[in-house]
Image (cartoon, rainbow, N blue to C red; front, side):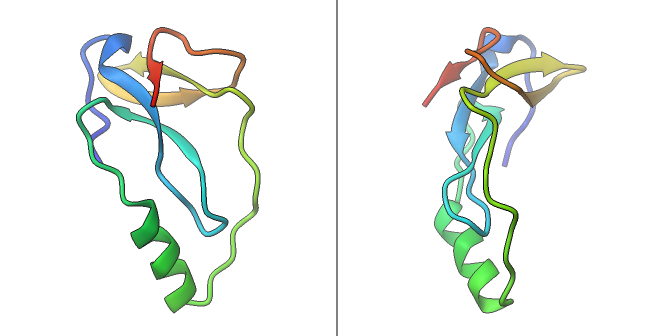
Length: 80
């Protein structure tokens, strides 16, 4: 995944997936995500995750990297 950014507008919240399934993460707006592949890898390795995530996560561009922030809302990045 691509986490690079110049401004917060370059970042969006997308489903990046984890062993529980849906997991919102902040990535570059043009970055593909592969939640199904993440879930398949978890199943193949018989891994489990701690389920849950911040409500209404947001995005920030910090030191040219998209980072997920705790909600509410988004700090300039969009939600996809």
